[in-house]
Picture 1 (cartoon, helix red, strand yellow):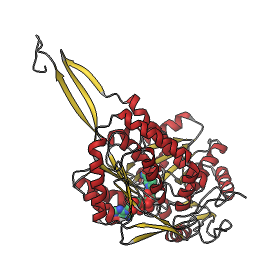
Picture 2 (picture 1 turned 90 degrees about the horizontal axis):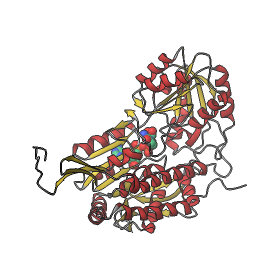
Picture 3 (picture 1 turned 90 degrees about the vertical axis):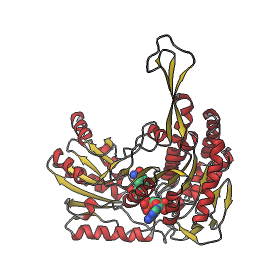
Picture 4 (picture 1 turned 120 degrees about the vertical axis):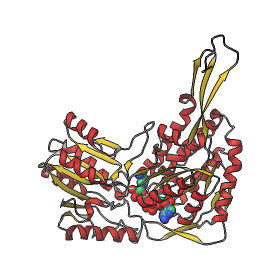
Length: 493
Ligand code: NAD
């Protein structure tokens, strides 16, 4: 049997990447536990104000040179980084899986989605030619994109490779010096990518990694030489990071949590629906901001629900679905299922009493659960549980379904499963969520389309990735030029 995941053979002594050097401060360290085994796989520094000052100073020095490197030259280095990512794909997928608990296949897909963003960033040299126009006789106006300077990305545990890559390939390609503060629960993939960025030829300080938690994030948000903050994580932290960074006049884009609804209609294609729903709520063990976690059953879809329950029973732990990030989250999810039942939901599938994959008995394993007959006043219908738990509410028509979504504070994804085009269009046009899926369980926009939610799933303007990312990580300069006196001069010339 092939191994489900390669856990590191010896503990990893993680360091910060500052000005192109790996530095290990002597202070407190953060233990990193693999969800697969429940055991420590290494540690990283709990960085202090002095470490933050050093990483920002290194990035600032690098920016002074990097901003002058032509886009085409920067892109050549990015090509080499892409090659290295593909060369090290399996190693990265296993490391990502080992630290965040998802399956190796899911981790591999995350790295490849990151590669897609690298490819988008590499294409900017051909697509983003700015704009020049003769605005009056003999007078031209030109727009130039300028990098912001030292910028920061703060990322969550659930996509150790992909979410950081939503940000830095675009940010560095357009000329910024980027500092990554990865989740302290999954810091090693970030470090590996940091080494690959150095190996590709990015100059020291153009890409840096600093580890830590709340204090490190706050020091980065407060630092006067940091120009912009990109954040992805839970809603309360997204909101506070946004408030803190913008209070200092910085640009910020902070993506938060979600509670994604999806409507299932009686005319939905059974194969497409069952596959889409089960993959969406069990993929990454439901620890995904795009996971469909609230099914809104319109009319009689009980035959489809039975199929969803049956299909979910077949999900194999460690092969189709990974582990829960930490013991505390595992305990919370077990309690959430019990609470749903207590509040009156019918437990159509109970994943609490499960068997761990062989050899990983110490890990945080939880099979998928399905709560049916949920009402919208129950906790499981409203709170982001962030685990493999599907709640099902029943409504009479589409407008009632849409009204539920409009009561939700979140607005990330919204999907509809139907074979009727007019119904799908109606839902897409009337949903308040920002990323809509028609017969798609995880409606993540692919490049060059941008990723970003609405309501309390996003704080700030712009989007991550695609053109939204290019806009977020740059400012525009407008240059108006005249080389000779014009005979028909007006106030405009
Ligand atoms: P989290 O909010 O706990 O942590 C995110 C980052 O913030 C980490 O780097 C962490 O170190 C830092 N942090 C934690 N507490 C902090 C504090 N008090 N002050 C400042 N910084 C702090 O999120 P998580 O548990 O790692 O990730 C799961 C959450 O992320 C879920 O809510 C999920 O929906 C969300 N998420 C959203 C998206 C999206 O695109 N909208 C994508 C992935 C994950």
